[in-house]
Image 1 (cartoon, rainbow, N blue to C red):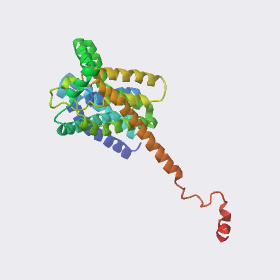
Image 2: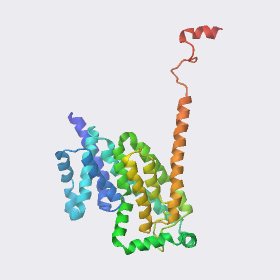
Image 3: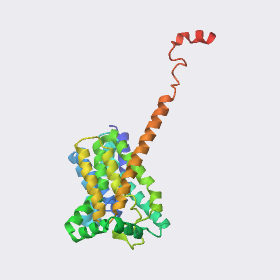
Image 4: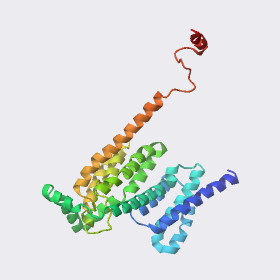
Length: 318
């Protein structure tokens, strides 16, 4: 490799550092964003990085460790792994999934959080009271009962809390395992589901049993995007052992949303048809694109494909 290409790879790593470091500082060791960024450490193991790569990753963690002590170890190494992974990706030693997918998902989580804050501005009056009344009349207040029971059993609550917060990490690991060829199949429905849900949250704002009375709580209950993501993740993985594991994970995710008081039972019920609509709409788009491309004539093909070109002039003269 010549010096110029090495400089380009180093520049790519520097850009990755610029994006990763602020995220690590602001969201260090926090659920969702911080955990998602830290998943790059597992991906570096998966990419069979050498000791030199790990040495460089740990070396770049020193500023975080000096600034934040033990709390800076994991996010600091995550920043280092992101930079090293980007350098290796630029050198074509690994794919982009192992380099910047965790960073991309982490920023996606931040963007979703910003959108939720905007939703709060348009929804000053959540409809939780109506949902509680409905559940009390028809569902025996099941959501509140499960949440209160879980809170009374701390280890159960902690278990479901981890399940709830590790969803982005699971997405990253599954997409990385699928490889570049399967990444688009998995990520597209998750992205569409995250975008399309915003107007629904505006129309049906609810904060969940654990946040009733909190005016700053996110209005992200109906449908449960957590459960919708878990269902879509399961639907878009090829049949096999991993898909069976994701089925169990989807069930645990549904249970966790109730156990920690983030959602109502009706949110989970609505999430299933929502996920199916997202999946169906993308299938329809793909079929439409396929039909359009298949019906588009090839500009290089002769006008009379069934007739040899040598007879074209003869046919025109008849």
